[in-house]
Length: 77
Image (cartoon, rainbow, N blue to C red; front, top):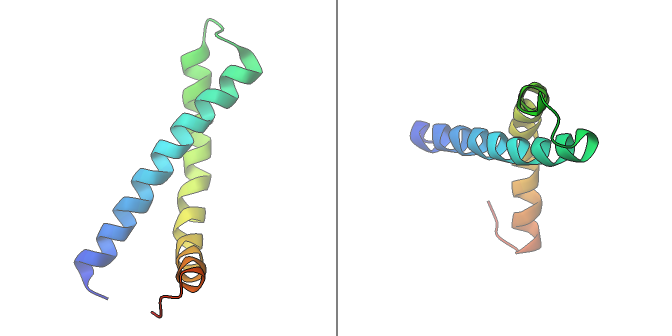
């Protein structure tokens, strides 16, 4: 695999994991606490924890998900 394609995939997965965890933790934090005084602080703690978990999981699972998606639409790779 070409290095630029490899790094492009890592950067894409990292950005996706960051955005997804950012949005998800906002809604989960809000649904659990409401807008409390220290909402932003609690949300950022939740986001940091979620991102630390989501990034390696995303990096490990993405090749499997890609293979499954390719099989569903019948692309051989």
